[in-house]
Length: 417
Image (cartoon, rainbow, N blue to C red; front, side):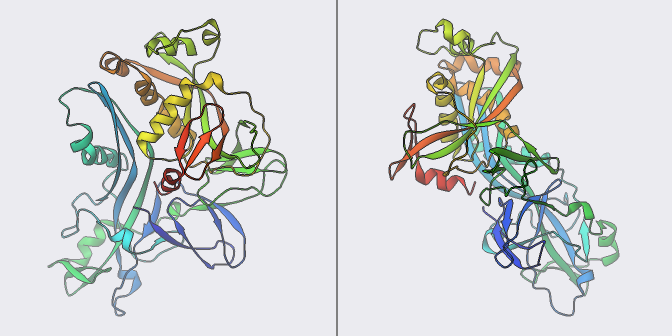
């Protein structure tokens, strides 16, 4: 479910229409660009059609948590994955008559970003954001956990959690859904409802950062859903951390083709505990790869390569496994900007969470290896963003050094995950 979001330009107030994943906003009227930073959950409001005689101050807003992301499980002798997209009422059953889920409604209408003071009453969110993970796992359980074998590991990768507000109103003791104007419950007291509410909280509002390079003042470049912004003036890359832009280590591998496209990957150097694995050679031995481990493998650091963009979970795992196993064939790069950079849509924190799942996927004998996973943990030592050159042949994007192919249609679909 991709939310269509309406919001106002922070500079001139003009309407901007985009997607839930959009971070870099450009106003079609004044042309100013802003980078949106959301403390906690992103919050949106469904459009209401409440009758004109209902004052805006008497509208009630019921929270629903929205989870969208990929779930990976390791059990028995297999690594499974599924994309899950659910909404769940956040009132914890305290408001009678509310539907447990919003169903397809968020897909059928645009929602508004909660970016300014809104009159009315907001029901307290009883369902914690962490609880939606368990609900998402239960939603996927029929497919991912039907095996009688024990569950050794589960990971949520690339998830988005947001809060959608359903507007309601009271009239004649009847609680109405303000989107459809259908009654939900009778004999409802406004005083009782207000006891479960709180007013609009200023900390819910997003902040907007100027898209100027902190190092040189140049214009930062990126696409609407980019999590990393690039400065072509001083050859730096920046990500938002704690409400400020922070520089990150990056490089780009040169291409022999002038029309190459570049896909981003997180190169994550880790230290492992719970298992004897200190070098890349140890990784090859532990996962029982069908090749001869040479001395140069033991001189290589233990690094995992994880896509820095969202894509279907099975292809995500295939890319991470194959690139991690083939990393020795990649040449060194340099921090020089180029055109054709694919946007970073998966943050490095999510990539780090994927490392154990990538290790499990790389194991040749999964039946014997997967039971080891609960005792294995990783600590990131260094993370670098690396852009690898791919050649678009009209159907697939092919990595020119290791001939790894990705369907172009899958890349386009991944932008909506």
